[in-house]
Amino acid sequence: MNANELLNQITIPTPCPVNWSAMTGDDRVRFCASCEKHVYNFSAMSSDEAIALIRDKNGELCGQLYRREDGTLVTSDCQPRPQPPSPSPWQFSLRSTMAVIAGFAGAFGLARLLYADRTQPPPPATPTSSAPTGGSICIPPNVMQTISNQSSGQSE
Image (cartoon, rainbow, N blue to C red; front, side, top):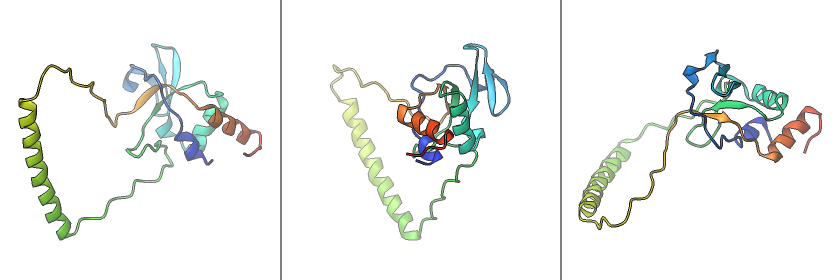
């Protein structure tokens, strides 16, 4: 696995409630007075620097992660997201037609919602945000093993 594949497996199971801007430090690392730990900003590091930090801290660290919509972890050496091609004229008219159809479907859905049976509670909302996630980092054991093996010169 390359560095980006390893980093993309990192998660933050329980995000930290403390805002990054409330912490003291610089763009790469700040100190959280609430938990009294250093918090590392992976988007200000290259992939290799992030792997070296994880190896140095033996996977026990807090960090702030930014992810793209496709789930890729953003690092300073991350490739820019490819720009979509500009639409041709026929695509514009197709999109306009789809927008009108969506409008009618939305109006129909709203009408059904207004006359729906209100005895069932609504399902819980799923939060979606492109905001950064910060907290104690969870590194899968196989990823940590691969990172450790890389430092000792072994390969899988």
